[in-house]
Length: 141
Length: 405
Image (tube, rainbow over the protein chains, first blue to last red):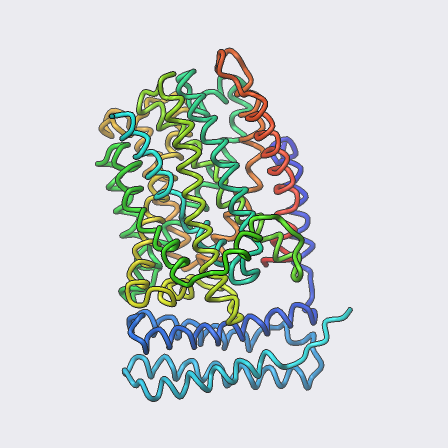
């Protein structure tokens, strides 16, 4: 009865999802996670710039940078980095912690309408984000 | 003159109703990841949708049947249960996505978490369905949806390289991240060819009492409305290609999306973005909730019309009430709306064969279409869509894991 109701592609998909859930962290996934974290940092910079220019309201900018800071902290505790050599993983963890802290401070600066402080944090966040992207990860199998 | 107004309104409805949470998010993700390379997927999706919408309008105008009605009558009730269950599940996911989109727009201007907006948004949507008429839902919200043209204006304002944009209209193999590329292509197609759109259109043709004299209007509004609507989605993709791609930004959250328009239009860009997201998602939520009720009522033979007072079609009204209430729950629970959007679009793509294959049979059945059965162009188009949908169904879930997970 069950096989009659479930079309073949869906059955196959269910199996694939089950198989994929057994997947372990790989350098490829780690490289993707690194790029996503750098992208989050770049987004926080862009949100702050939009707020500073008056294009985006403080309520939105503060909420968005707060969410991005939380996302950077979450990335720091992700299991994906275990696929990397210890030195690389340590460099990424250090970079993510700095980014998470700066993004949280940027959120506070926006909240307090501290424009000079926000500009400094933006510059720092931008630079640190570039440094994170530059950490090499060997993805060759 | 009234026909001209009807055509104009139909086109406006197509443009204003095209963009919703799924098409906006997938277009932005595609532009951010692959600049203009996936424009072809938006064009293909809009073309497929135009063919399907035209067919459903023609079916209703000639046979006076809606699609669910014809499916049940032609294939029997037991067969009809399959598309009914699949479609209801897909629509529930997409409805939650759209309610989440409205709630996120409200979060952006209020600072109050989107979770707490889910119930007020659901209530407002339900109240409008309860009190409103089909015309209000179809035309009222869609006319307001014209605000989404801001994405086209914003894209033009950034002076994109038109040669490169035009080259994006031709399908090509990706230079990098193949799995992500195909996953996004599938998501765009799933977002564009949403079955709820042609189910809604088919019910609307019956609500508006279409007949043979409406066939020309049907063809023009399907072609032009979906065509221009596709341009709005292309606008969002081009904006993301101009704003996010050079900065190395991947779209992971709806919170990033206002930057598309603030980068092009400054403060007004923010206002227009929030209005676009809120109105487009609200309009789509209304259409999905009422389409879900149409599907139930037409399938089970209940009395149905959005133009009747709820007391006269109680089971129909109860259907959209229950659907809206259930769809609020994932948003209230704090589900990641972007992840829900991506999953919904791929599931929507996977569900296409269940609806499109039987529709192909009906569209060639003279008992329904008389002398207006599909010609070779329409048959070829539908066959291509069915093949496309079949491929989508097979590849979309593995791609979700490899590329979008």
